[in-house]
Image (cartoon, rainbow, N blue to C red):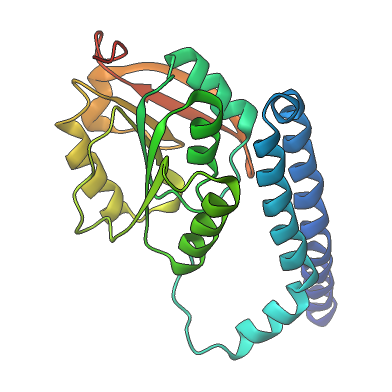
Length: 239
């Protein structure tokens, strides 16, 4: 009986591994469908989506090779968590906060998708902070291909050491950081939230609780997730 149970668990795990990429691909297409009208309005968003879909398709095709290599890789360090942002979700927040021509900082910007959208659709001046080389490369390549190298700036830095740059709005994808890094980010945002807007995905900031104005559920690559918007009464009126 014990052998049959182990065999069942093994087969179930294999099935999950095989099905999971198809599920994620279908959900990815669902997110794309949500933003269909935005693609029609902003052709560069379509190009950006195609670039990331191409990358994800290549990663899917190479999945068996990547799994095999991971078994023999001596480096077992934790990899960064990267989530796909839904353009319709970003648009929902941007419209709510009227982010036209704002300066936006994405803390842990990954491949820069959020910043590219705000630069294209809302003419924002954007700054991204990222420390992982593969994401930095993808970010800079996309900025070059989209003609956004001047409007979107990427800072390659360790968030535990680097201070936050000046911005009107700060986005934080909190699910991708360690508790230590989140504490460090929260400490810096406490002194900024009185005159800035802070948008946190998936993680509440206790130190900023007095400034919590709204909670919005938005679609991300892992499903719908609560997004918390912090600001003071007058911080949405940028000078």
